[in-house]
Length: 472
Image (cartoon, rainbow, N blue to C red; front, side, top):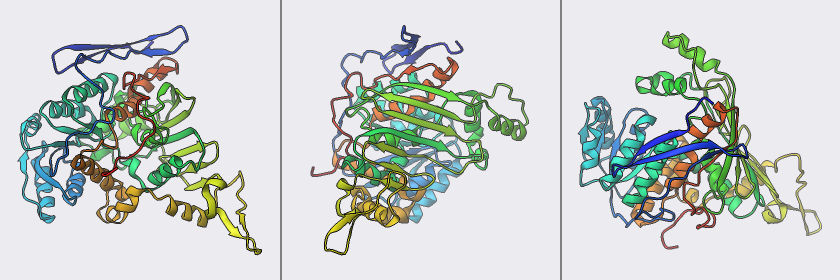
């Protein structure tokens, strides 16, 4: 066994949480669920008091941060109070973004690795928006919540079980939101397909697939101090699972009527990643950890299955995969968008006049997608209410085609209206846990690994994933 299944987690109260894993008689590697500390309660359906104007502080203004400042400066009901980055030029760049959009100058913090703490300690900030490298997410989010701020964290928000439980306990104890900034759940196809699934067009969803397949060769040099390539060098497993996992978990009502129970992961040997590192960094990497391609299979409590893939080094077209397989239909986004649906559920959209005044159902087969005009009509009829409201503005403001804008808008909207956020701390936990659990499986001969119940028994309290709207 290559991995020691013990993690020590330092809590804000100065206590330590010991998380252990062990083999069971069934061959499944078990993961302990630590007891909820006394006085804490879950954050399921949690809604904080409404905030009329959301005052925001940004930490990390390198790759993702400036885009977030640009988007937030165009959302009503926001006040960008503070900007923080180690590099002063990044802060200055974002100050210019604010000026361009008619916003006042923010307080700037730069020049010191720990200066972000001063931002979190301010008493005029409601939300800390964290867009740093992965390894800094958790201490920053914890410190923000401990100082009375909601935390929004770029993906992946946490990299192992210890960090995940730390965020859960801090959020539960402080009663502050801790949301992962997963933009892909707001892509137009994903929103529309989710709405179709919730209206039963695919019957019961039995299997779902997602992925992050994106050759990063042209991007590696853009990561500050090479942090992302180094993480892949030093860690095995699916280190970036949330883009693929998030949308399918929403469609499967994970911790809203179902939960992930067990996973099995496999990877290929490291070839392209290792070669790139050795060629472009000039260092030998005989123990380069991340395999070129990683795949993880998951089974849920209610007998559904999920497959998630990760590949950032081979010459493949960009692909998040996104598939839903139901008892009555099918949805697919990459490489070709298409649907197969239950004709009875689709109604008049899949009916055409037969010349006698009646209407016949299109010749829908079990071997192909619906015709393009039927697909377009379905997507228009089942366009998600969020997309209907925000599509035009999102396309104008941008951010991965507009989904980043919708993500930020919905975060602000829910905070301003005192609503539960679209993604809670347990979504964060479930979507991030593959980073370590997949490695545990791989390093133990592809053994099945238990997925912890991060809700600690509350996974069935809410029935069905739904977005919250004011007035409902």
